[in-house]
Image (cartoon, rainbow, N blue to C red):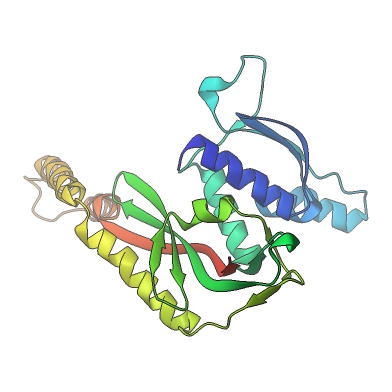
Length: 259
């Protein structure tokens, strides 16, 4: 996920959640948060408990998010946000909670006359390769609910069109043939195929690092017949640190009727 994609995601997230954008350039956003979004992402529960307990006037935060540090002038202060950062992961979680599913219709110029919109199921996935180091990848897929054709980088397709929550008067949207649940199974299979075909040498390297650290731990206790509790604790900590896992998560998705 490149800085411009992070920037676009932030703008869409805050705009859709009624947060006023006070200032913006290619490399930053300054946002006035709403009470709801402040509670979800600013990690200050004691402040909101105080406000609610005393019936005080709420003062949600104004925040500047820097999406491209290399293009930022030295006099701009804010929170650096990038793919993999805790704050962006927090926004992904907030998106799942606030609206993981949408139904949208492409806006079509009335001059075209009556047009037919085709249903697509769009899903954004996050794949996390986890061990003592973590690598995260985003994938966006769309599947045509009439033909079953799967399109990669579907998010980019949606960015190129204007969407609305209600269909225009001059459009007729076709009902899907492939049920969304069945289509989701196909997309899940596609993302699992990507994982299966990926290079998994990272897992073997993690195992080597685990074995190395385990040998060091065993060296310090090699003359101890009855291992103390701290040995078991450290051994368990190494297992948790180096154990390899692959997580596939759905960030959000929706039904999109496109021309």
